[in-house]
Length: 124
Image 1 (cartoon, rainbow, N blue to C red):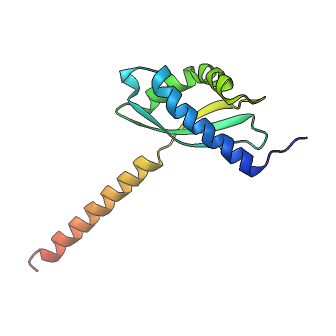
Image 2 (tube, rainbow, N blue to C red; image 1 turned 90 degrees about the vertical axis):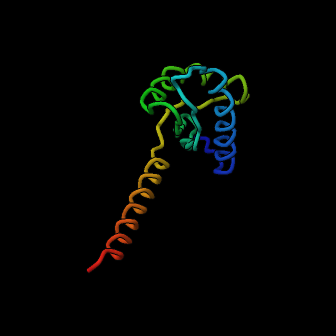
Image 3 (cartoon, one colour; image 1 turned 120 degrees about the vertical axis):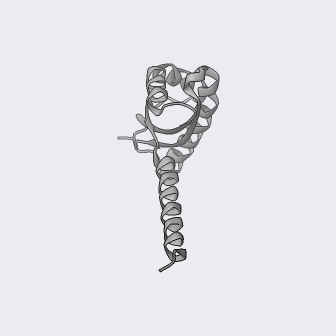
């Protein structure tokens, strides 16, 4: 069995991320998709599969996910032409909610701090 080095694995993940960041806006032109940003790529050790984590601005995540899943095979074929490697990983798209979660947590903290300030300034 042939194992790839972690360094090569990361280089390939970075290249796939760059290529998808370029291909998606060019190939999936639809206002209903908003702005899709590729956050990260996780490759399986055998390079057969790639988890593609994305965020989206100006569109519903479910709509963007469906469009990306529908075009995964097409994007795979475009990557195959660009990467010049024997096996291009199968693409599996996942919405990355960590940024939205972070924004929501920040909002809740701000709300709690504001509420605390109001309590302190209220007459006893």
